[in-house]
Amino acid sequence: MSAAPASHSLMSIGEVLTQLRADFPDVTISKIRFLESEGLVEPARTPSGYRKFSHGDVARLHYVLATQRDHYLPLRVIKDHLDALDRGLEPPAVPGERPQVPSSAGRPDWLPGPRALGETTELRLSRTELMSSADIDDALLTEIEGYGLVAPVRGSAASAAYYDADALVIATAVAEMAGFGLEPRHLRSFRTAADREVDLVGQVVTPLLRQRSPEARSRAEEVAREMGALSLRLHTALVRARLRDVVGR
Image (cartoon, rainbow, N blue to C red):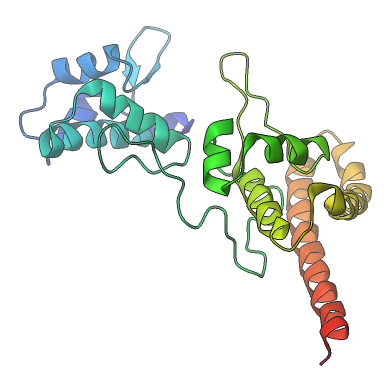
């Protein structure tokens, strides 16, 4: 729910109070400071110590205050909700239940969308959440990882490793293919083909990255996205064409 904003978009605590009072007339600066002390919001600080809030911080405060008012939930539960939202999950509808993965996260459309390459997702799942969402057990996930089809994203020193939306898509697809008698070891060719496609993109992008300028890096990211989308379109069309040959026109 929050991001690192440009400095010109940051607000003082007084400006935040003005925004919040439109929906919460009783909110005070002391209340905002209290919510900060409880770890529900972490505004930036100027060198002189003044708080500076982003629009994401205001959204978090609005969520906390609305949830308190409408559902009477304790702050520790609301904090769990915020953690779920930060990881791309949906907060539990009933206190005590687990957060849910959005229903569309593991089942993309047949045609690749704009998140083809170079764009990340906010979805961050634990190992248990990935297994539950993909409807697989630990043994199958271990096997999938063993064949290099899925790997956890290593977090920073302060955060644990997690699985992203692509891992969920892969694990879900592998689980469904198992219903047709295909095991992870049969799917290594998909990983090999993906590696080769990425190598081709790398041949085009690497010279741009060697220029070591912000403009060149921006261009490299744009080219990678475009080539990734083209690669997926080509791959999808080729598979479709060959499937017609297999099953007949």
